[in-house]
Image 1 (cartoon, rainbow, N blue to C red):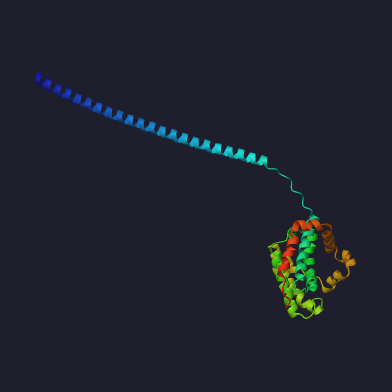
Image 2 (tube, rainbow, N blue to C red):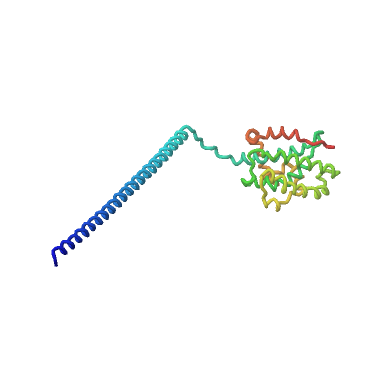
Length: 272
């Protein structure tokens, strides 16, 4: 092989070698740039993560500080408050309050008219209904029947009761203690208490009311006319009346009965 050919091929090899070097250098630069870019991205991501973590930690610290402040304020408020143990309820007093409220409602209904006409026979019929229906459960300690204050609805019960008295006076020529009138009107009055008056006073109904029967005319007249036999024949109701005597002052103070009595004076009806 001639010297000129060798020089030519050597030149070709040198040129290829130079081209390969440039290509390798270009690849190295590309890889280096990619690495630098990736490093920058990683640093940026780390920076963002750290910033987010710092923000989250700062938020948690503020929330904790706020809660600690709130706890300290509550502690200070609790320390400034004085707590007293509530007085235990006297069962005899709340029973007396309940009975006094019902007695006052009946008394207001009985004194129904503006001209002084009264309806003691209606009160007697209501007692025949309410003694087994309310008074006995109260005296037996059924707390569902307790009334500690005069209900707001009591005035409405008085108003409707007075209207019932006027209706009876307009339609019945004799008093309710007449056996015929008693048998005709007392079941109607009983339904009025069960379906209207008692739900108004208690805000609910009791299925037991439907199954309760009024006292007979003979029994309630005996209650009225023979007080000496009351402890034996009506022990629970007799005890209720005894409680009224024992707790008279406390009842007036705790039940708002004086104001209730004054309010009922303004709703009496005209007899004719």
